[in-house]
Image 1 (cartoon, rainbow, N blue to C red):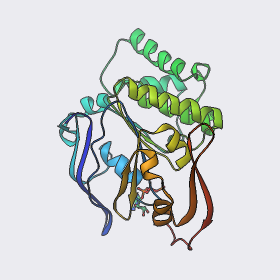
Image 2 (tube, rainbow, N blue to C red):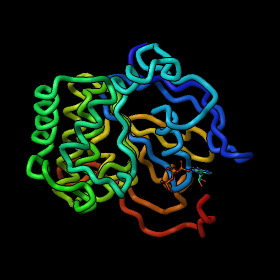
Image 3 (cartoon, rainbow, N blue to C red):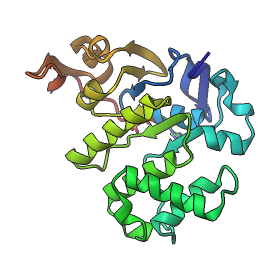
Length: 262
Ligand SMILES: Nc1ncnc2c1ncn2[C@@H]1O[C@H](COP(=O)(O)OP(=O)(O)OP(=O)(O)O)[C@@H](O)[C@H]1O
């Protein structure tokens, strides 16, 4: 099958089962899929497993190839992963960090590597950050640099964990529009988002995780319903079309005290 396939995936931490035999609908190239669900549902855990950064049982394949069995350099070329936060304590400047991400796939001639790194920074509108130390960037700037690191290898599969969490309104739109372009160029894009109104506007489909498994999936209008929001998030909510036709999600009240996350 073309695209990403997740079949019968189980993940536990010690004796705690986080995901229990999870299978997702196949995620084709060309589409943006949003992975949603409440805190501690296992979204980051699943993303890390797909990126082969955590252990799991089950099958995760990209274009029919088992990601667990690909050589490291090839996997690094095929899969771009944008974590929730960039690790701090780096002594690199932004350009060096992009070049380091590029080197994970093997050596590229220096001039070519520099050009590729600058092209990615340009594409994301952050070329002015190239010579800034990573550790001196704002949260939003770090998030844009993290995206640059994830896409510089031109991956077939792009995994993003809450990529808009530190971005202002204009940059949220810029990033999500960029994700749509990256998908349209022939990539599989899977992003964790908490903001369901953004998901409604930008995703081709939404996958909802809940209680260790798949709750629902489909186009935003199919998935984002008051019943789903009540069952999964324990909120009373309205889902309505605004004047431009986009879905908006309005939360009216919490239905019950949430158990503590985790
Ligand atoms: N390294 C770890 N060791 C033990 N438990 C972990 C570890 N990482 C995550 N967990 C637990 O796994 C569960 C799922 O965590 P995960 O981060 O995948 O959730 P999430 O859906 O991404 O949540 P959030 O929306 O809050 O980011 C949580 O109960 C969390 O406490």
